[in-house]
Length: 437
Ligand code: LLP
Image 1 (cartoon, rainbow, N blue to C red):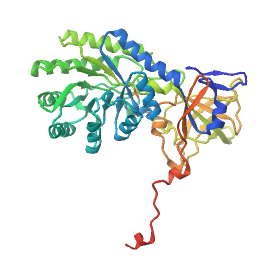
Image 2: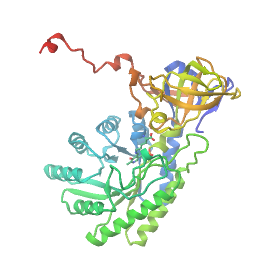
Image 3: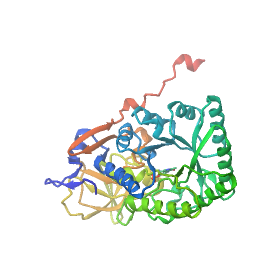
């Protein structure tokens, strides 16, 4: 997919770059992003909304992959940005992302984070709970400014997805519960406050969702909630945000819809449900993360040791693993791979790809059929662009890999590889004096 192909040497080429050359130039493991593919996903969402006639914002959920280069790219494409921490906010601001297009999420924002966001002049807070609502009201009053907010509500929809990443169901740590009346109460409080500008409501029903029915049910529930808010306190929303969660293809058999299909289902449902309840159409927002960057990312590894247990299994180990891609260990997530320097050779050997961490569960792929590979070959694992680098860690004191963007035969280093010195940057050796004291 994207701009990948195979060259005359039988090597995998992404964005016009032979990945085996990237592996030599930048080292491995290496995250390679197909810039054209990221941009085309951004454009697909923007274009689908333009067609719909809605006023809209497409906010990239930066948690999927947050670096300064990515924030800048997203800015250039005209998207907004969803951040969930002071760190993501800082990254975006440092990249020059316009504050007014930043939406701040999170179920436990600290006072420092909230103050930082207010000082920067962000577009809005997506308020998760009554505690945060109180803090924002109070800060608004202290600062004598109205704080723009959306209320995150849990409409009680369970998306068909892995249980760890479904967040729209009633029993969730996120958002104001609709069923018990908390959501309505929050709307009333925010609407009546002199210090809050209640833009509207938000819901997010889960992640890696293939069907549109979950979104449609969520829109119905949101419309019901808004009808009650209208009838009880005359509240009309300026914004409706239906979150992200649109699926991508990791392995054969994954059947995501193209961006325009999700947008079409959502815009149709919103128009229908709100019109039926005589609620003027608000601006419509979505927050895709994974579907913007997931398929654009490929991780390159160098193959090292091999272990064969006769009649049982063959293990091939690579120079990364759960430190650069936690998803297989955390969610039993599945991936496909190719031997990037043997693309034209027949796949005849079944192997399992092991990481290098001291942990039995550090397996990237079980039972994949590849051309017979040797130590020194380059393994390319595809669709690693979302929640790969974002969840990378230093377990076993393994430095985080570098990230490059590739486009039209040019590679641009956008995150440097961590060094061993980086690993001990915050370590302190206790001095004798301190030990004695
Ligand atoms: N908006 C909200 C409020 C969210 O909680 C999320 C994801 C998104 C948007 C973006 O969802 P996306 O379009 O990327 O599916 N680490 C997990 C995914 C966690 C998603 C959490 N929330 C994984 O690797 O699968």
